Image (tube, rainbow over all chains, first blue to last red; front, side):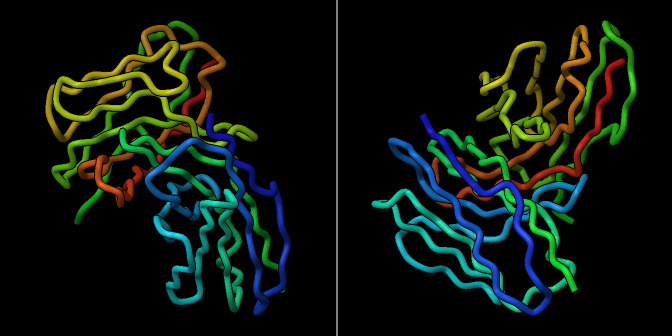
Amino acid sequence: GQNIDQPTEMTATEGAIVQINCTYQTSGFNGLFWYQQHAGEAPTFLSYNVLDGLEEKGRFSSFLSRSKGYSYLLLKELQMKDSASYLCALSGNTGKLIFGQGTTLQVKP
Amino acid sequence: EAQVTQNPRYLITVTGKKLTVTCSQNMNHEYMSWYRQDPGLGLRQIYYSMNVEVTDKGDVPEGYKVSRKEKRNFPLILESPSPNQTSLYFCASTDNPGQRYNEQFFGPGTRLTVL
């Protein structure tokens, strides 16, 4: 099976840095995606990790450790518009995405 | 513009009245998929299609049907909707899911309420 765990909610302050963790138990996967989803809208792609290590894209970075079953999404210089849900998802050979429940991030002034 | 479209965006219906939610993509993607999203449960796959005339069940297929007669279209059919199918539905597509990097593009979502 593929259990994916994320914190349900997080709160952070505008301008700060926040780390959203994702842990999983699985027998194998192609890669790990992070999606952002504003309430009632479609998920939009943020980052993808296939190898262990850090992937950086502007204010967003994502890290993967396959041996530890662990990933995180790092958001820097938080802005109010970053208030959203962040979804961790594993991808397999059939194209299927297995999603975690998502972490709702609230950015406060 | 490359996109996935869904219709309708919002639908309120009654138990037992057959309905179809359409999904279309203009990116010539082989793979298409339907997900439903419910509070506390996240996104769960309903059905997927690897190519024309090839469909398969996802994690929660009960009460749903799909068809893939053309590459661009992947409608979701609820033959006899029930209140537990009230949910937010997303269609998604990607190119060659067997590749390691297979970002899925999501439609805008269809909010369905079954009374």
